[in-house]
Image (cartoon, rainbow, N blue to C red; front, side, top):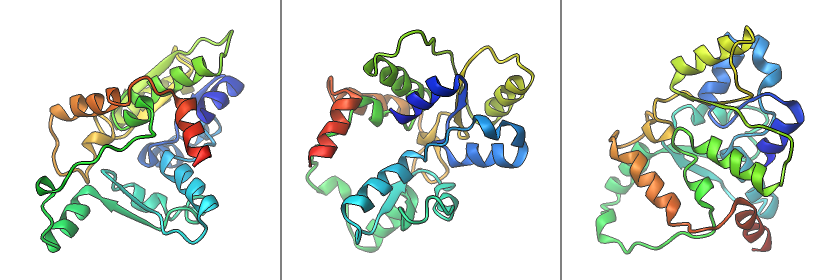
Length: 219
């Protein structure tokens, strides 16, 4: 929701959810920094919300991204996220405790929109921004997204933007090919991963982004 608002306000934006993409801009495309979204990543933003509600909570982010380990060292993120574990590290923790996931009861996790659930694969952020613009009833703004699948596509898009030949107004930057679902901290790197994420997204039904936010605020 916030990134969609910022996009409309500025007219051109690069995403801020992938810390490796953000770091690439900071190191190699510094003249594009003014276009980087000022919104924190979903990890940091949700950590902030948790800390506001439960100041003494310990926030642990578990995911496929190794770059998140350096992101939590950033001054603007450090207050909100205490630890980062990759899926590989979580599996090692399970193994050390002799926990076998397939033997445990599966419980449905609710409260998240399908758009939030598919953030982890290439194109998911763009779909969420498009939906957010619709839910905010934005008129007179034409979303022209450039979905960068891997750091090489990110580099090419940023170079085109610098020279005014991009042809888009929103760059979704994902450093890993396929998105976070192919992150270095994943246990598997399977072509089926995208399909599984999409299936999980559809299981949220017709819950919208604003609906999901409202549910969180009421808890």
